[in-house]
Length: 132
Image 1 (cartoon, helix red, strand yellow):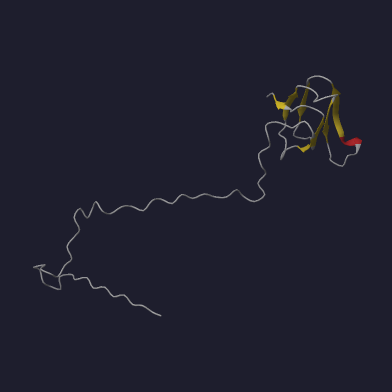
Image 2 (tube, rainbow, N blue to C red; image 1 turned 180 degrees about the vertical axis):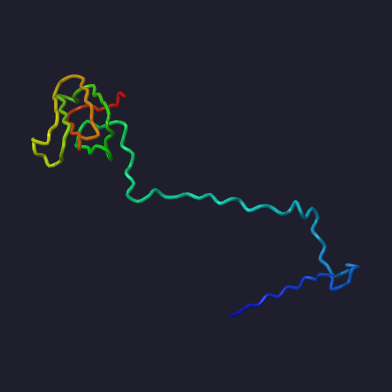
């Protein structure tokens, strides 16, 4: 089905009297024109953009430096029970030769994670909080 809409608006057709040949302007015609709102553009995050690393490190797990843990100095109040273990790692295979530095203790501990570290491992510790 095809519909055709034809509209004819008179322009005066040479008749300067204007009687019946022109459509009257609406009252306050200039005021009735409004600008279209400017569209708001949002761009989605680029695919593959790494998430911002968390401010704190939970007490258990192995966390990649960069995408999961920011380099910096962190402190824990100590173990959740027993002792608290931490390690700075140059790899994530589990091979003991990948340990750069580690420690264990029953009290407060502080560690500085470097940009060159591959991962940070922690077990039995309370949350690690940044101190710088």
